[in-house]
Image 1 (cartoon, rainbow, N blue to C red):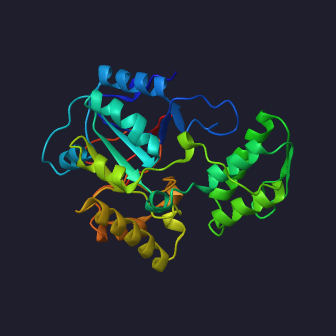
Image 2 (cartoon, helix red, strand yellow):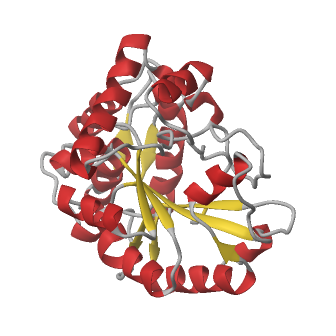
Length: 301
């Protein structure tokens, strides 16, 4: 297990990025990226960080950046992306017991329809299929795979090429992979696939330890959208969150979050909707005074 306390420093603060926490192990293709940590590892990671540093909220980071307070030495913040139900049922109780604040950035379309991402759909198709043969020349990812290791190598290639393609419709892309593999039905794994209900999102928001922010409505890469779609994506996600929470929303995180996934145009659109902070998924730590729309995070996988 990695020692994430190595990222804590008296001269900087760290923002940790989680997605999910599960109690069961997954030896197959699903969750091969370790997007969902095992419960025991999550508990050990949070306890280790608390022993080595001081947990703070994203609100405290925003305040310190505005000169309205100081962060403790070796400060760290905990964040979650997407809105998985296990954030509420598994992770939040651990954080509450340890008095660790957290911000949950939710994709409102996932919450509304209890739907899954295109990457999860592709992982599922690879897991339920036997030997695989794919021809995807429009991404450059083509090949065959029979063993788990071969499937994972091909999946990594598909993820990389698809995420770099601005013109690709990821849902249609997943559908094409399903068609080629002959997959016709999705049987969700509740631990890996279920998203929070609106009531659970609201309950998290009502806990003083926790904050809820936006993470897109459809999880499309914001920088890839034209101006009209960008405004619509942000407006819809924030409108649904504000309706659920009964108040303003000032936190956001960029879907995918890599340097090519956000821009000044995206930041301006978020600022125009009242967002004050939107961390990326770029690896690294931060100093007080760094741009709150370009904060780095450390993925815990």
